Length: 276
Length: 255
Image (cartoon, helix red, strand yellow):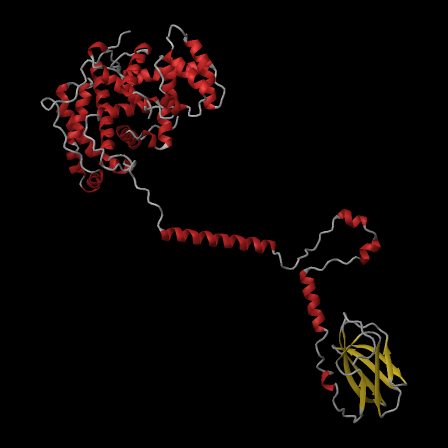
């Protein structure tokens, strides 16, 4: 199944069509002070930030372009109503503007769900579905390469392992640094074996054989017995999860196992080692 | 699956990815995101929707650039003092409990039925139970009472008597003796003599008549203060006293 592109091309807002460009952010400390002393002023200052978030959602096709002003107004009003919750909920660890933008995104998602239901007449609680016809060939693939790079950062607990396994799975040449990050004590034999596996052609080595070769090394690295079948299932689950995140919900693209490999290869070329 | 990320944690994760400092996130957040597809989706969405917002990476971040100040010298000193104090209290408690130089307290032993039944009647009769502390103190009190001077007799010891008798006795008043006790006296009166030995409560423990001026008390007297008097011809000739020490084995008449 060929990848599809979004209905509306993703682009950064231009000064002519998009919201006003935001000025340089003020210090977080000052914004926190405003939250407690003059929250109305804070929300006014955040209005341009809200405009950018709304614009980005319009670019994704979540809202029609003509609703920008109304949406910004609706989110602004909602944020003003939520000031006491923001004061209570903000724990001071993140930047306040990131925290407020998270709340703005939640508000917009709720509005979008409500709109979809009313448009399609779906009963409450039934998620709307979209089936955009996308064509990756017409789309800037770098957006998805970047997205894949970010998605890989969402597996912090086993990101180095995931990169090694995926590269072997897609036969993308492993870098020494990637291997070291996953398994620093890897002996020379296993290291050479892994590097060789990542360089073989798919035709030369079936997936079953690949996992049979990988399993003992993974078991050695993790200090437990790992079967080829277990490793295969683990990899299948991770690939399926990455594809869901990459394509989005509702889907904005239709990458599959094969095209994911192509994206990963491009990511490797652009970034070199996929280490942290 | 534990509770999903809060808005604050979500925002922190997004900040971390913008600053490329995701490995510095709290372990619990990293662990949760690794395992939760929903939170991955939300982080990714927020990151992408705020992608075009200006981000001042030079500004110190409230979490990633937080200054962890070491405790001040005063606090360190206070903590050390508290630690030393706690240690001293702990050692003191151990010392008190173990009581290495104290007396060995012997608790009254509860004799078991088996032991009792195994003992012969004679053994039970002769066995001496280790006294309890309260019994020991009572005995000590009793012992002291036995050495209290008699208000009736004390004034007569060594005093000139109304009878006008001139007598002297041996042992000297207040001598410490042990059985057999020999009492001798010299007086102008001729015998027979009546000799009485009384304890400090004026109780007569020996009363005898002798022709000579000498009596040997064979009776084993308990520790205490004793008075003795000699009467001849119906007149009191002499009043004296001696002590019997239970721990002392003396012979003779004393000094």
